Image 1 (spheres, helix red, strand yellow):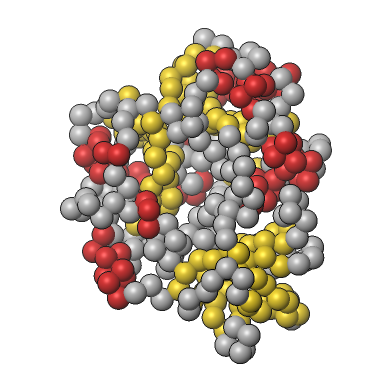
Image 2 (cartoon, rainbow, N blue to C red; image 1 turned 90 degrees about the vertical axis):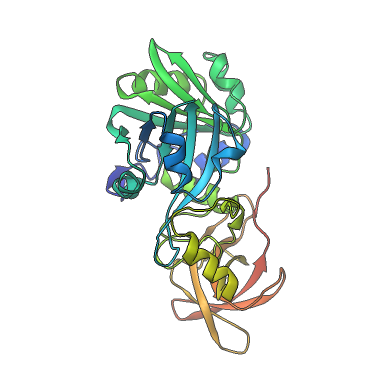
Length: 332
C-alpha cells in the first residue's frame, strides 16, 4: 500500500506490477480508482455552468457521452485539474476530478461532492468486455466514451467507456455497498486486480499525462500539447484570457516524449540538457516500459525538438542519452 492524493492505495496485488501491467495489455485488469472524485452537478443551469468554466465545448457531445477537459487558473492558465465529464442525462453531469482536487472543482463549478457514496472500478484490456460480458452483458456493451445508467445487484450504477491505460475498457461507478460484490464478480470472470504501479506504467506507455507531473502549477494546456481540449470558439471559460495571451506570445516550453535505453529510468525532476550543455528543462515522469523493454518518459523543455533529436539527461549524477519520441509510446 502507498499514500496517493490523500488516500491509501494499493501499489500492487499478489501478482506484482509487471504481471498486472501485462494482464492489462494482453487480457483484462481492474483498478480500484475510487480515489477519483465525483462532483454531481444537476439542474437546468448545469450545462451553462460547466460551459463557462471548463475549456472544452460540451456542445460537441450529447447526453450519454463523456468528454475530457481542463480547469484552468484564471491568472496564468495553469491546469488546475484535468477532468472527465460524464454527461449522464439532460440535466445531470458527473464531473470526475483527480484525487486531491475535488474541493477546488466544487469551488469552481459548484455541485455536490458524492465521492464517498460510490466506488469506481476501471476494467481495462483487450479482453475486458468479453470477461465483463460473462455476468453483465449490458455493461460490456457500453461503447467508447458512452455513458449509461445500468443496474448491478439491484444498485443503480453509471458505466462509461473511458479509462487511463490506452486499452479498451469501461469504468463503473457503483454504490459503495455493492462494490465488493462487483469486485468479486470480476475476480470470478478472471479479471486481474492491478495497483498504482501498473496504472503508472500503462498510462506512460499510452502517453497520457498525470496531474502534478505533466499538468499542474505553471503548466498550461498549450505547454502540455493539449490545445485540442481548448474550445477557442467559446466566448468565455475560466483562464481563457491568460491562455490566449500565451498563445499569442508563443509557448516558451513544451512537453515531449523521450526514450532511454536500458532499465534505469529518468525520474521526475531530472535535469535535461541540449548536446551543447545548455539546461533546457526537466523530466516530469519516467519509468521502465514492460512492453518495450526500455525506459520512457516525458520532458518539459524549451526550444523546438523533433522526433529522433537527442538530449542529455542527468540521472543522479550520471549523464545518459535520451531520444525525443512520438507519443503514445505503445499503441493498441
